[in-house]
Length: 107
Image (cartoon, rainbow, N blue to C red; front, side):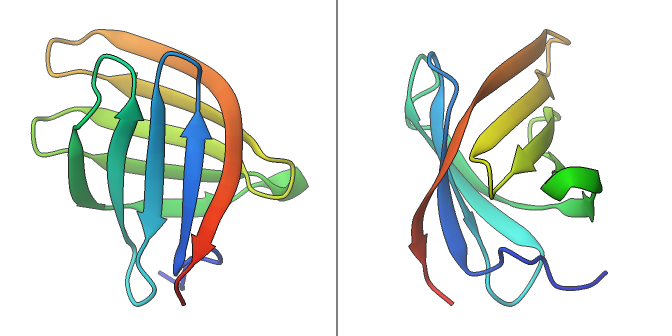
């Protein structure tokens, strides 16, 4: 898989009731996330992810967490929008829509 175009950068996703940072590694397809707001605040991990560029500047990004949770984002980094779909280990399904903004570039 080729290098993620936003590798080496950190973004904040804000879905209102859930706010997180996603820091994409510069040298591999992994990200470190941290929930910074909402009921899951404090949760964090490093996960391997897969991505694919879609039309219109959208990127689909997916990963599975150690507890079995699955996460899929459809992010538009240029427009600053994020959709997230995730399933918890108890099979609860969530759909979120919010904003995406750059926090830093750590190339």
